[in-house]
Length: 118
Image (tube, rainbow, N blue to C red):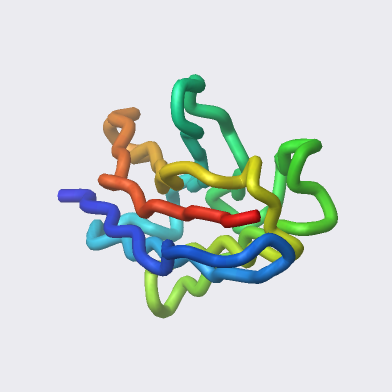
């Protein structure tokens, strides 16, 4: 059973940094693609960054290029989102996503709140 748990959100000043973590409790972490999404207040959820099942970065949103980096640690069954030079517009709830390669079922974490103050 896949369960995603995010952590690392918080309040940070503009220009600061945060590192988000997402732990996958399932048994097929290596086989599944993973991504980070975010949802700002009053806006739709948007894709921030994505890794293939092989850990290749296939997408980074233009709005975060050069500032955010997604990575993973297979041994810890975790993915990370390193966020630097944060801006107020980066404020939102950040979600971890995966899709089980065997069942095609998508899984979402409950999210972690990032608040960037001006």
